[in-house]
Length: 432
Image 1 (tube, one colour):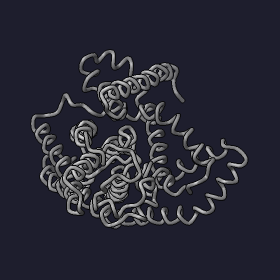
Image 2 (cartoon, rainbow, N blue to C red):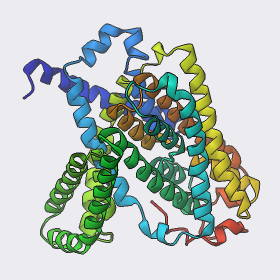
Image 3 (tube, rainbow, N blue to C red):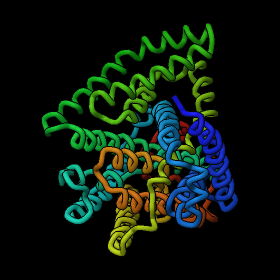
Image 4 (spheres, rainbow, N blue to C red):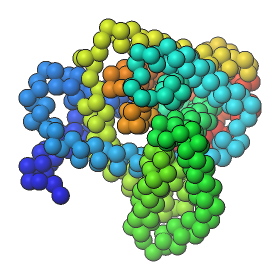
């Protein structure tokens, strides 16, 4: 139970955080950036890097240590709901129908930055890895961190630019979906390696996750029947079932030895599509959790991000990480797109969009910090990389799409369609 003083502080902290993140999102939208950039920056500014440095007394008054565990708990609940919505919005049909170009670009855009990240991880391990963390787990985590593409933020950018119904939008969303699926699988292995006592235990944890996925898929017809029947009775009942299911799935993966985030995401992916009551309930969850409570996760992230105490060496590693992340992802995605028959301008647009990391990267980094595979200092460097790679996406994309009707138009069949896209699905297939 919350003590009276802690409750009073929480009642001040929560609306202050919400308003700060909304203001940050509004400010960056004025300059053409997605709101998540402003929300991430607001979280960092409320932490020790800015507010804690300029006015430590004010930061302690607004965000005292007594309320931080509760802010973190609320933010993590919102995060689970957000990952559930991510899983729900992932169009598995687009993956099933993906053709050669999508598969080639997806693999290249994740394997090349992962290889760069693995090389950097090997070089950083003796100096920057936390004590007791195995070399393999550390190297794999850095590789995953550099290979992430933010599926939900990418969808928002494409919608804001009017590209969500275009061939470019369809193609990139399908590639990002494949990237996310591979990255989450790799992250499951990293978490299992860090939390299990031995490689055999880690393999057992991964096997249990596979069993959970199989069970959720087998239960899909029963879930459809249950949710359809509940929807005839009350949307409130459907909302309760979805919330209970996502939290129980998160609890299950946590007990297995894998992060709760995976359970929430898997439950969302297992929910059957086309149930009207589910769509209405998901919209209600999105309307509350994302604008009201998810900012608490950003602040929790910002409070762990202290850029003021980074050494000169860490800033140097940060530049290498940023260069490796951008070049690895761009060369992998753009190069593969060019090899499948597209011109360089189209390929550059694909590479630019695939470099967007956003909230998904923060989730991955938060998991890494929580399980102790990275230090708070390295976490701060990687958060900075996530913010920069997300922020540069829109300005570069705007420049690339200027005066090019194939890239600017929101239409079903731009002309001429590049050869790489001739093999993809209809434009609406991968629309989020």
